[in-house]
Length: 197
Image (cartoon, rainbow, N blue to C red):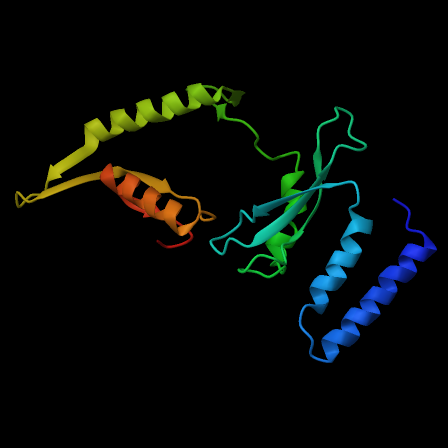
């Protein structure tokens, strides 16, 4: 999108005004500047609020997508920035969060379940139903085979030590708590989470 001279002058004037007002101690100058710039830069893009997937901080991000210029007509992520309305990060992002556009558009990104059959040297695409049923079947077999009901002193422990679980870190406290309770109810002790619940 080409920026006209008039649009450039408006943005420059808004930036000068916002920085001057900010220097005088008035709050909200940055948000005013962002509101003035955003319509020009991403005018035809669809804005979606989301959470950064990288760590347990769960910073808010604004994801901009557009189907312009794509061959198949599907919307593609064209820009990601911090959400200034989010109370956690107030519009800032770490280096990983700021570079998440590359993650979203990477050709190496896994987008569906893959399965490598025993003895095979390659992965094949499978359905979500197949993947979930296979995971459940293997987990049940392993739990039935290795579940420990009592320790050597005869105390009931109900432990499943041969399987571990790695939880997602970008969940709310409530989702993290439910994950913890669900996994612990199976007897799994090896539960890991970046959030260190």
